[in-house]
Length: 151
Image (tube, rainbow, N blue to C red):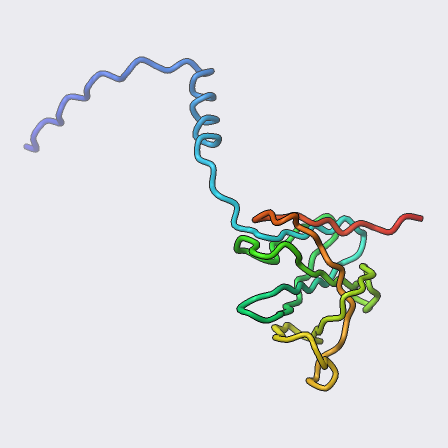
């Protein structure tokens, strides 16, 4: 015959429901994870936005793209802390219409790209585009919003 099961110890007194809710809420609030994004771009237009970013990196200028950001969506386009005060952003819709009207000439590619250097775009097989300069005020992380033009 198998041995008898061990006796079950008495249960702890039940915690009032309000305290259980506070305990669960406290766990969610008590552990704050550090933000990973250095630059987040949120699309507040009604268009799908194709976004490219430029910044100084490893001693020279570099542009990267493409991030596809749907209407009312955000994307982390730079995941590490920002180390330069200015970043540069270019955005266009799926038809190639520019969503931002910048003045800083930088290079972009027609497919996913990373381009080092900012001169002679066409001679190097890239497309020249005009990026806007975003002043992050030297903050380690920044969120930018693409908004529909007025009117």
